[in-house]
Length: 325
Image 1 (tube, rainbow, N blue to C red):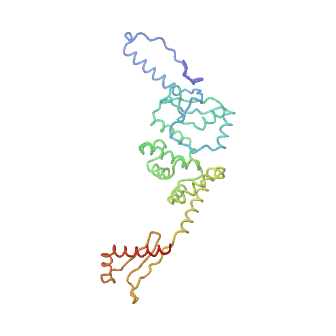
Image 2 (image 1 turned 90 degrees about the vertical axis):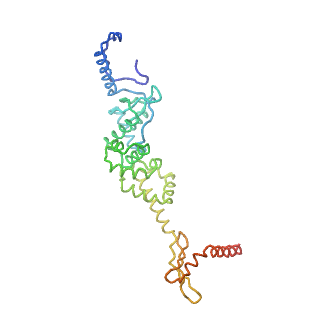
Image 3 (image 1 turned 180 degrees about the vertical axis):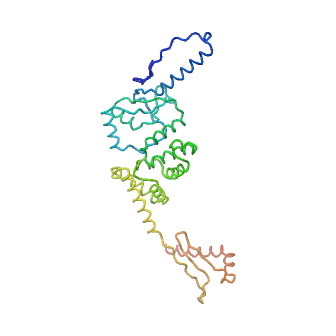
């Protein structure tokens, strides 16, 4: 009986006779039958089947940061004219019988859904580890993922506690490149990257520069506000990155311009004009310095009586402040 949801299959049907009772089957034949069943299972895994798109759920990691509308339109037109030429890969749903999960081929699946057509697919039994490896290696083989999509994919694998060697295998890169990709991918949350998109023309150096600008919380907040404006989504992905980068630069420059310039040290003198201390105010606070070489013990006396002196000065400031109110 055909599995529910499978419309057609390219799997050749093997002719088998009804097996004899187990007691009459010699051990060598059991081994031969087991090998035949294994071969048939492998043939079925490599067969291309037509699957109802309503039976397919998402799975794995988000390897694409949104779909380019123009490119997706081209794919839809191509499938409408020539049919689906390359099958997608599915696995049986691990929790829901008679359903499937997509391993790779999300763009093709989306196009076929919009056309109301079944998807041509191979179906394989994969655990979660094998799924992300297959997903990453297929994307790398296509070579159409942008740098930030690969970096984000690596960061998602890292967040799920996969070893770095597994990440390297999934993306077909070496361990030093894994470190470089993680440095970028972990600098941005997935929701923000979805707002920017794949940015195919933006490389590692520019993303690292944006990450550096985002160390300024004001710059990050300013860019988030920009992404919420209606016009932001109108441009292409590269354009959105450039707009975000310029906004972050501007916010950082404005903060520097508004930052209070530290005062130069100012000498505090006795009634006779003798310098006894230096005072300086910065954005972090006010510092009083009593040079030990000319203090003649005054610095030690201040240190011993600092609590009493500061309490008295603060009380005087409080009284003066109250009078102004």
